[in-house]
Amino acid sequence: MTTPAEAVYPRGKVAGPYPALSSRPDEAYVDFIADARNFLLHAQQYPIAEYSRKLLGEAGVGTSPDPANTRRAIDVLMQDPAVKTYYRVKRSLQESFWNRVLESYGANRKQILEAFDAADHMGPGSVSYDAGKPLPDYARVEIHLQPGGYCFEPLAGMLYDYGLKVFMGGAADHDFVAKMGARAAAAPADGQVRRILDLGCSAGATTTALKAMHPQAEVHGIDLSAPMVRYAHLRAIQQKSDVHFHQMNAAELDFPDGHFDMVLAMLLFHETPVPVARQVLQEAYRVLRPGGTLSVLDFSGDRKRDVYVMLFAELDGSDNGEPFIPPFVRSNIEDVIQEVGFELKSYDPSKALTAGRIAVKP
Ligand SMILES: C[S@@+](CC[C@H](N)C(=O)[O-])C[C@H]1O[C@@H](n2cnc3c(N)ncnc32)[C@H](O)[C@@H]1O
Image 1 (tube, helix red, strand yellow):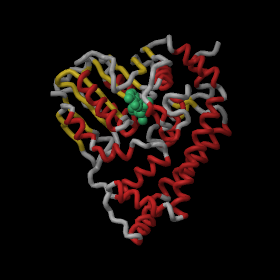
Image 2 (cartoon, rainbow, N blue to C red):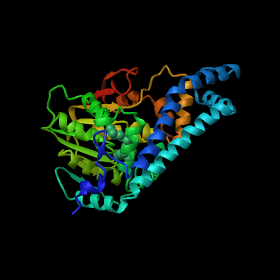
Image 3 (tube, rainbow, N blue to C red):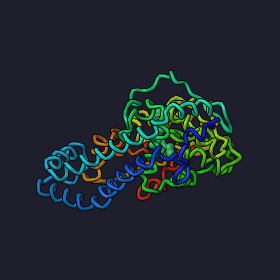
Image 4 (cartoon, rainbow, N blue to C red):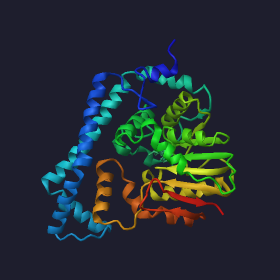
């Protein structure tokens, strides 16, 4: 009989936890896309930046990052065939990547979904979800152009996980980024860590890394998306990690007041509308006990940004399905963290993800 793990990992795993694609030709194609993408995003990034700055200078566009100036800068750059093609190719590579990965995993769709069904009832740990749960409208956005977004494609967890491996160019192999996040999440000063909450846990890599760091604690990961938490649970079973996943909206947490010692939001807020981020922070404040810690690890909100930083963010918004990045970058989330009642203990914008924003509930 095929076990749930065999159905999801028929060709084994790659780079630690990631399910291998269904065939060697799929791997070869996706490797080509990944290399082309690296060439574009890394080797070509500096020449394009230099060329774009020259074009903006010639057009008399100033350096202000305000929305009107940023719009003007984009209009100037998109009239240039080379720059326009650069962004068009970037988008097409992203679309081709997702289509092939979906097709590849989709070849075993029936068996994979049966594996998820079986894993739903297995331990260690647990998963709870409600496939009919109403979702906020913004959940329909296909972030990073991922087909079906996080919520509307049953294989979303596997797609996202493989996408992370490729987009991070090796940095996420063996869950390295997740382990870095778990290490950066601050514990309360009194050392009492009984319960931890991971908000927007996606494939659960950081949730299991938190459990490994705090084995005595009860660890919960929540996500809007049922496909994400179902895959996260199966992935955690593979690692024999006793964590609890729930489909839940971080803006309406189903946990009592003062229940947690630590709350982590890693890479969540650049993918939510700013008013939702505020609600989530209010909820984080409510479910933390006094002295409990909040760690927000996300893009830097470096206030020294200029028009070029902002146009990059805007183009990621329009061309890469990331409409919430520009308002996030402008919002200064560290201000919102304090407005909802937290004491901000540390934040180094130059370090972005690794430094994060660490706050305490007084
Ligand atoms: C970039 S992923 C997060 C990565 C993850 N924290 C990690 O460390 O690997 C963003 C996740 O946030 C989830 N999300 C977005 N809005 C949410 C909300 N209101 N409540 C819970 N999860 C949400 C998405 O479904 C998605 O899985």
